[in-house]
Length: 126
View (cartoon, rainbow, N blue to C red):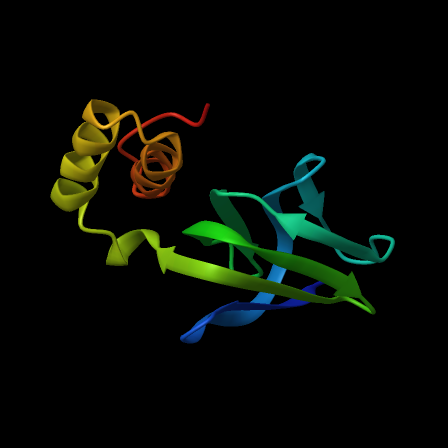
């Protein structure tokens, strides 16, 4: 089975690393799916969930906010300003942050909170 090596790195830590068969991320040109042997890619990451289908049939989901995606020679690097795995997300805190952001009309903070809730499986992707 063809696979690609994935590194998901935030500014402060390595978030996830491993083999995958598919990665879907939101870029400046829309949702982009990367599979083994894809053409090279270099793009800006937008705030959104990243879904990684691992070679063992599992799925890793992370909330990513800003950064870059680079793919060549079956190596995918997701270099994010901020990234959290779904199981690291404090859902109650994200829900409170969303309510405060809506009250303050802070669209960027609302988007970050919504992405965290989508990654945690508490909301559907927009």
